[in-house]
Length: 290
Length: 289
Image (cartoon, rainbow over all chains, first blue to last red; front, side, top):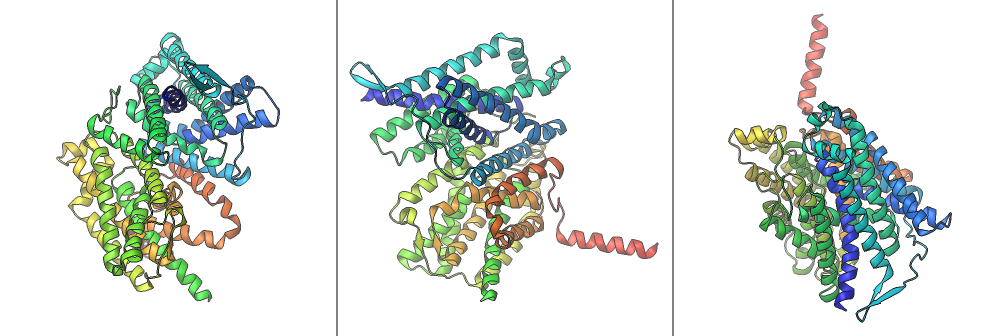
């Protein structure tokens, strides 16, 4: 029973991690909270759903389609809503408001055009289970966990080992300097948004399979923001660990205490953490830059 | 009949305007982002509602209690998240979580009658609503013209420079938050007893974003701009009932467009008297020529 709960928690946590990593990536480069991240996740889930239900594609193709689609949506979102503000050097408050506007627009456009109906993905995992040490673990949980972790480690390798990755890290450190060294910052930011969108696509598909697909499903990113704060805003390993911790704790609370209190618990944990450890677990920069 | 319909919309717009004033102080004048002020409206509404529903507390006392409860909630959220030198994003994230947690609590407590909501008496008459609005306007105006208003605006323009000039960032931001929460609480208490029914879903992120959209479209750093826009935002959907579906996407688009093309909003840093003065000067200049 405990092992089963732990695996479910890790699987939910790994989805939180995917969302939190994408959000943290954008935060570390542009230092604003991208509140449109949830809408991109929701659109990723709808793209996956369309591919699965309308075209009857298999899981791998559905996942890659959602990744590519959500990535492109994130790039377009940046070009339309943030690029002009970014070039003007507008305060991050303006970027946050613009992001909120995007999120509201996308969510409610889906609501107005596709409708508020809840859709379910076709059964990819046929509720199969794997027996391990006497407890049965669902294949979906294991799959979500393994794929999410693999994606995050691939990102880590991309960021530390490739030229583009080095450019991203340089951009995190100092965007102006980075552009003086000959890096095309517009392209760099597009790459960052594509990566964040791709992660959002994976998260969207897994959320859709685990729960359902509906216009406000992106609200679950509230948890990703909390996870990112737990790990320390702007830190990628922090976002991953924060997501896993939050997922496991929440599942433990909903299994052993009460499922209703789960969201209240996450929020209380956030406040408690901000009081005791305001920088998060792995946070480095929490002060507004001068 | 038609008269009551129009009066009702007018009073709802007035109530909404009180909450918009609160958000305007926090976002427009202190430069902090909030996606959860509907939670403060909800706390005010539920505190006042529960008091009049269960314990028959007199209406004025219930309003005060609602304001007090919202103010305390503001302190509880503000103290850990607005601590000096923490990025303002922490507040935005915490208030998001707070709004959701509050909704879950309201839906599951027996005293609030859960998701079914509370049916209340219609106690906020026109005199109460208009009186409260005028009092809030006068209060906001004098607050913003005081030393504190100058401190808020200094922080909005440049927190580092403001701190260099000796302003305590934490205390000033916290004050701004508590004042805005109290105004939202008053708006909630009036709202609950105007439409005579409250439900947890009335105080979600959608409501918060509508408050924020009014402030931004009206102009950050103006009192009259957001007030005018909040009036339009309450009245317009009533006239365009058929387009109800596209109201929220339109608000979203409006936020993005305003940020890109006219971040100062409708009124910028100006107020109605400034505009009147400007027009007079223009007219005088013409006459001289």
